[in-house]
Length: 212
Image (cartoon, rainbow, N blue to C red; front, side, top):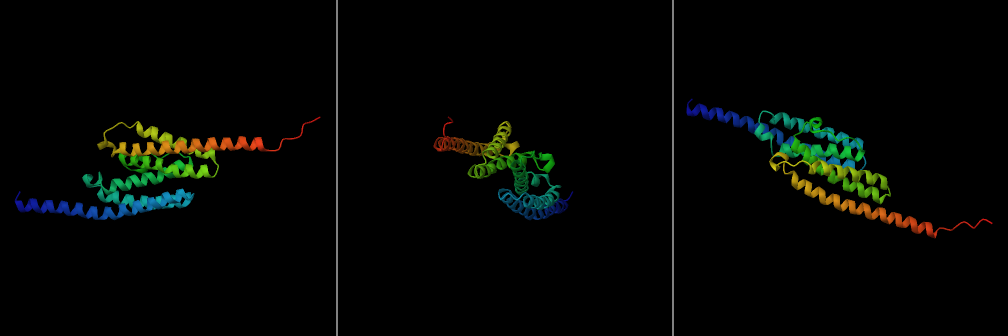
């Protein structure tokens, strides 16, 4: 094949890849933006709004995935991976807060590494909800969420694979462990204070007169 023909063929391939990337990057940005809004809706206890925004994020994500499908080298890393991770985080944060089963990476149609990263960040997001429940005196609900956070950590710490396969999961797990330890300490302190307060109030409350 002549040099000119080789160059023309290469140029066609690169043009196609560039066009796909130019389509995917804005779609990934829309995905990430909608996911952030969805997670804020979860924090504001608006599950309907959170689900609607997650659906919006999914639509943008599928657009990006479709654009990059013919170009696996572009799809494997970069903006698409980040968008998939944020989408997984949004869906799993909503599930964990609601006490529902978390969706699998097949359910979400995202890569395993993106799913793992999204789960670690969803676990971290639970701290805010636990503290809110503690401030509201809802210890049972806070305990349930703390158990969920601990289960997320237990799952992630068992994924003993190279970072090249998990997208740098060890760093995320280390961050989650620190958040889990702080949250467990806050939970324990609040439970002990609540018990102490109840004991003091019981001792200070008027006693019924003795029965003759």
